[in-house]
Image 1 (spheres, one colour):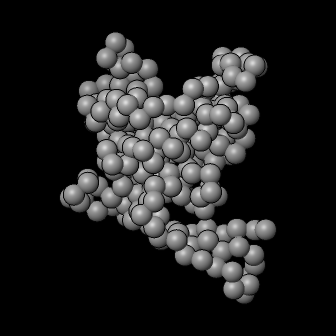
Image 2 (tube, one colour):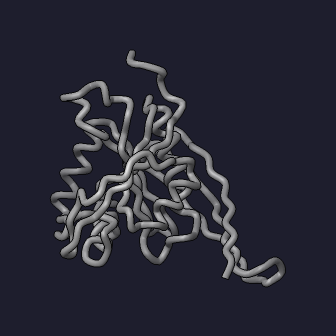
Image 3 (cartoon, helix red, strand yellow):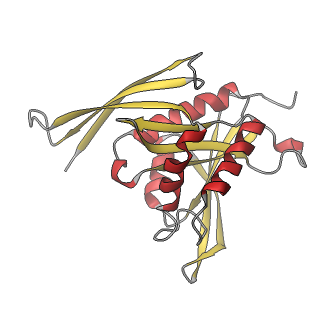
Length: 213
C-alpha cells in the first residue's frame, strides 16, 4: 500500500536540554480521499542520560537478528553510558526522536578516524542512525538525519560518512535519498552469523570548510 509522508521542522535554541527540532509528520496510507490519514507529532532533541535505557533497547534489538551492527553481543547500560560521556566530552551530537513521550529513534556522529592521532581527519565524521522497528518508514529517520546534518554543518564538518552492511539495501536507498553516494565497497571486512560481510561506505559532502584552519 502506498505511503505519503510530509513534514516540517525547525530549531529552537536555548531549550533546557539543548537545541530541539520539532516536526509534524503526516502519514497517509492509500490514495487521495481514502480517509486513512494520521498525524504524528515528532520531537527531535538532544539525548539526555535519562534516554539511555530506551536508546540501548533500540540498539540491542538489532544485534541478535540483523547484520546492521557487526556485533554479536548486546551492549550493556554501563557501556552505553560510557559512550554517551565520550560523545559529550568531544562535543559530538547525540539526538533522539520522541513520539508520545517515547524514544523511537536516535542518531549521532563521531570521528571517522581518530582525529587526535590523525588531525587531518578532523573535518570528516561518521554517523549512525537507528529507528525503532515499529516506527520505520514514517519519515522519522529523515527528520533525525536532517537535524544531524544541520548540526554537522554548524560543527564545521565537511564530509559525513556512513558505513553500511552491503546487504542492508533499505539503508543504502535511504542514504541515497539524502544525497549520500557510494564511494567504496570493501569485501569480507566483517564476520557475523558464520559468514563474511561486505562494507559499503557512503558519503555526503557538506558546506563545511574548504581546507584546514
